[in-house]
Amino acid sequence: MEDELNVTYITLTGHVEVQKYRYLYFLIMFTVYILIICCNFTIVYLIWIHKNLHEPMYIFIAALLINSVLFSTNIYPKLLIDFLSEKQIISYSACLFQFFLFYSLGSSEFLLLSAMAYDRYVSICKPLQYPTIMRKTTVSIFLGLAWLVPACHISVLVIMSADLKLCNLTLNGIFCNNSIYNLHCVSSRTRSIFGVFAVIVTALFPLLFILFTYTRILIISYRSCKTVRKKAAQTCLPHLLVLISFSCLCAYDVIIVRLGSKFPKTARLIMTLQVILYHPLFNPIIYGLKMKEISKHLKRLFSQTKVM
Image (cartoon, one colour):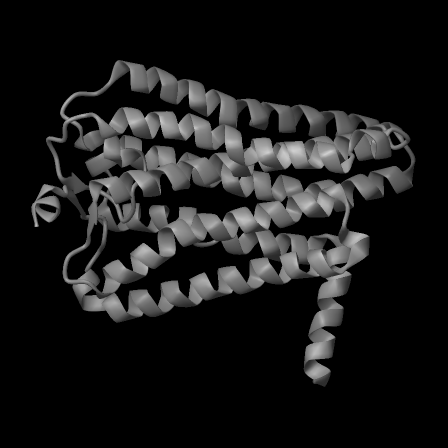
């Protein structure tokens, strides 16, 4: 009983007329969550069963799609529970855990995209060296670092935040993001500096690396024959579209937190939903339609389903 009394609960105030539209909200978000799981795992399943898709590029795509499902699973179940609850609350420890997964998996997406950019760079710019550079060991190291590095950085921020005293138990949002910093009585200079460092390492550096590699690919493709240009366009365009989409959503997250109460509540909710709604669905759609080999297997899968 004493342990229950000692639990600190945070009230989530970002919902708009949740009492009135709770069942509509629940139905929409539940449908989207099921679609996210089905769409992403369909592509992962195709990559898993077809040997011609057991290449670094497709393995990175599968990792990216699994990352999207994990990212969504961190948000959607709690969101669905909140829609059906009288009070939208979360314990501070659970809030910190959600914050950790949100930014850890979000940063992993940047690192996975940078690994994919490097893979495309070697494939197009150094085709003869590709088999020796992009070996299974190299791919495994890239995947491990993509999830481990952000997890280490964000865990430090969580540990720093866990010891700070709370003066505010109301979070202006529907899930735990950077807004949790507004709950603390005093802002930590050390945490702020380390937070900037974490953003630079897990987001800014990968973004600059991606831009650099795709610039190099563009230059080399422009100087090469039509076949190389076509290959570059087919394999690089989906990655660039996903990068632009995710970068915009990250910008949304920063803008929402910075503007705070100055932003209208309904508009804030809509922008917040952009972060968790369309991007996890955007990834499998882009790779399913734009990647030739995946698209081919996807059409076969659906044609077999129709026959059955």
